[in-house]
Length: 389
Image 1 (cartoon, rainbow, N blue to C red):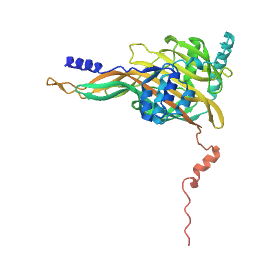
Image 2: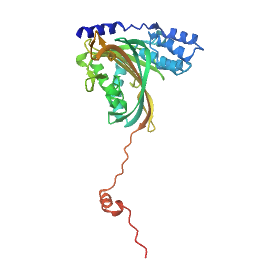
Image 3: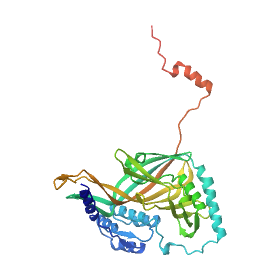
Image 4: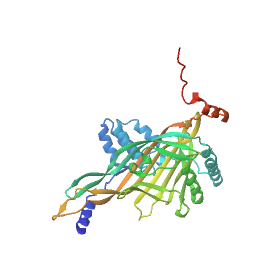
């Protein structure tokens, strides 16, 4: 029986063809889209799914390109293509030709960022926000052929969308929706983006290594980009991945890895407008990648402007359990259902919108008035009218 299972796993592994994406620069992508004018939405989406960008497609350029596409399928394909490029460098042509700041100026910018974290974030009001997440994967179980599951790496395909309400109150986040049920959320768990994540990561960064990166054009001005790295013994960033199935339950993987990335700030105010976190997961762990990007922008809450998350991207790669449920009999010996494992990459694209101030409705009465109201029969039930004679 054991030999049969080993044979099945070997056959299963041989049925996993590697997907070779076609590398493309941003300029080549734009040329391809220009040449594809008039193509159907489905055909263009298929072509985009065959590409892999070697440079970062910024959110600003993504929005401009999406506006020219013929339909939802191609726009969705371009979105996931942009998300998977989120941790690459921008094209050289998009880097402003400005001299690097001297060490004193760099220190001043970093000092402003420290003040921003310590002063601005604690002053955020209590609010409610809606987050919509589009989920994509590049692993697809097509069918079972004989005794072997046909599982392939495919161009990223849309799986589902989740909609959740997040309440931010006194620095704590409470999620209402699928994220509150682990078995309904797959991939890298997105936590603390409204403040705690920044506080933890920035504290780690200042205890790790940090150096100048480059200038970058933001929506409303030039941003100062710093590169950083945090060793594991100084890391307080928790990676949470959901979920691995157990016999009777679901369980979440969690670790404190070393990590590195970029932090983009407004040099005038120190406000953080973009943060990337790329983790260094040890090779013996059940996941291989757990990276996250958060972009911040101005939002209005109760008539005031605040910088809050507007978009985030998480990319994870982990072992995906595939049930060989069609395994039946081999040489008249029937084996039980086996689990095989394949590497699956998940991309979660999240948009934050509809910020509203959080208010608890209540009525405050003086103690005397409260006592009177409690004793008054009118407060319990309406008076019974006297009978007419």
